[in-house]
Structure formats: C-alpha cells, structure tokens
Image 1 (cartoon, rainbow, N blue to C red):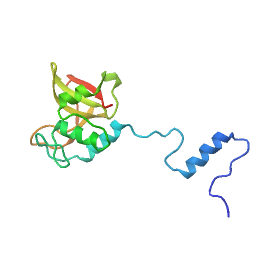
Image 2: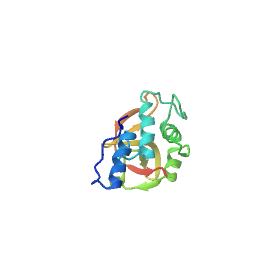
Image 3: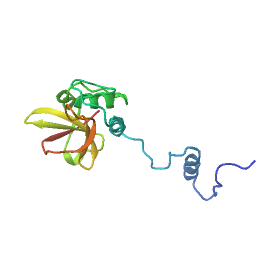
Length: 152
C-alpha cells in the first residue's frame, strides 16, 4: 500500500524531513505557525458578542457593561480579571502605545481615574460595550487619554 507521506530525498536533513512529515500529518501546524495569544483569543470572544446590549453591572453572557465584557472574554479563555475597569488596569502589565498588541486592554481615563475599558482590535479600534442604549461593537478609539495593559 503506498504511503500517504510525500517521498523525501535522502539529501534533506532528518529534521527538515520530520517537519515536512509533521505538516502533512497535522494540517494547520505548518512551520512557523503560532497559536493565538490569550489576548487575541479573548478578542475573538468579545467580537462574537457583537450586538449584545449594554447593561450596567452585567457580566454576560448576553448583556455587558464595559468591564463585564472584558471580564467575560478573558474568563472564557481561562484568565481571571477583577470586576471594575480601574481594578482591571491595576491587575495588568502596563504598556506604552507603541508596545500595544491586538488583544491588549485599552483603559480610558480622566486624570488618574479609569472610567472605561475595551479590547484592542488593531488599527486604533476596540471592541467594547460603550454605554446605556448601545450594544457591543467595534469602534475607533476617540481620545488620546488612554492607557494600555496586558493580561498576565
């Protein structure tokens, strides 16, 4: 019976041959492929909640306030966060804007007071639960008064 694996020349080093064989046996595990970061995984959870209504104090699964959405999204991927935006800021590793990555938290502040949080989606946009009368949505960051944090 013919093998399902490609024929590998004896001239290819053994490690390269094993990599080729593994990529045939495990599609999606091509050389250099990386698993999504926890932040990217949480971002997908938040995006899947698009259209869910805002409700003050709600933590899901069908209604959210801002920190409730971030709490829910990270909890679904096995990471814990405190309940409020300010406490979430204090629980993250703080980053500069230049170091932010997709899936990091974006904290809106007035002076030292953190009043809102969302999950960074790239291109200066966040997934968040904005305010009463709105739904979870993707939106452009509207101010420069933001801090960034990465969930540990």
